[in-house]
Image (cartoon, rainbow over all chains, first blue to last red; front, side):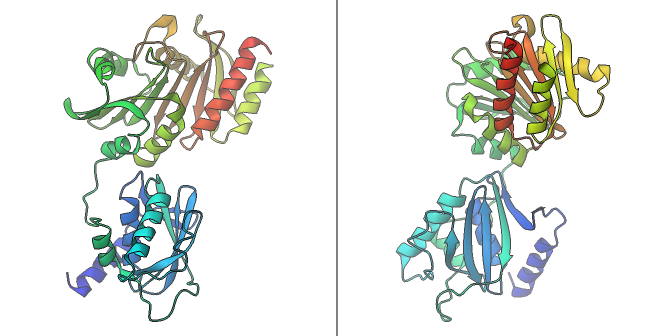
Length: 252
Length: 120
């Protein structure tokens, strides 16, 4: 891609009408989509002048010094970055580059919501220490920045995989994916779902239904519906809040 | 007092818009708490949904057992239905905004419902 075409693409992205802001910060990833670390790299790739790029990932914060579409290093973080704070990235120090990736993955990798805010730069390293370009980092960290976004239901299920005892995802009646022992979930789909949906008095669009104690072993059942996608999940009741938060971030 | 508990629950939880304490055995809403008057049809529909979700008369809607708590979320909001621990026919129906902090709200609502139900 030529420089002009790339510049035009970036200006177009910045002017996009569906950009969401929260308290002055731009939302760059929700429900794990795009991949949070990739979303950070995309932000860096859009930054020409030197800036302190503040990334908020749910409750975590990390401040990156970026310039010329390169990541120079980490200037601050809410936790876990002591070993790399203030160090300018260089291909000659691969352990630092790997440690920065570990910090970003730890702080941001599982975040439901990522926001970016540009602050004035703070003194960082020496003038000649330019850091590493986004393309270089993507290559070193093995990230595909052009990855096609996954459909919302797949993102929702992926975000809740750890909380699920079992899950079953159907689209237009065709099995898309399953995990765990799905016999009880299959029974819901086969024997109860049609009657349940017919009985709903509040409509049947995109929705999440959670039923605590729905299974005899004490696990809860969740039913997520979005267009032609239907997913049934068995989960521990303690995950209700997280399940709803991710549903709202991705499908709500 | 039921009204005081419901008032306190609504005031303590941002996004909580309407509460109704109901008896599933008679399918009646006994007490409501809302900033604006709710039409009778709205309350009836809420009570019907509570019966469906929690499984009145041990009828199971989804799964193997009647639920002790249910949540229904869509773009317009969140509805939460809770069954009292010692008196399964005592239920709390809650209509809330989409941004409700579900975890905190359910914990608070459950505690207050159990107090209401036990007459404490």
